[in-house]
Length: 125
Image (cartoon, rainbow, N blue to C red; front, side):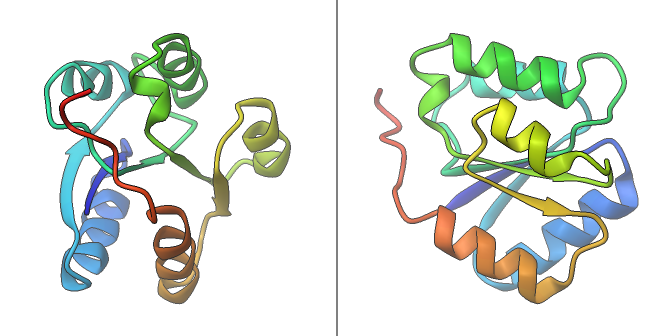
């Protein structure tokens, strides 16, 4: 399974990537929503997206709205990861599949990723 991490903090992104790679996931990184949208135009699509909300250029909220507006891209499940105090509300508003409040434990991350990454996205779609 592959995970696209959209996170502007290199330390956080690298830590998340290391944890997931250790568990056998293929991981790609994007440091803002614009870079992530460019990546999603390529194939194959990732199995899952971990999305930070507060980023420069294109933030997570705008990224998610653009993703949902595209029939193909909207099929990729999204887990919001954010330090925002309203992360639960934002996740609901943005129709995210799950959310994690930063800071999170490795166990929380793996539990949510394993439970949400159950369906592969067909890369030919």
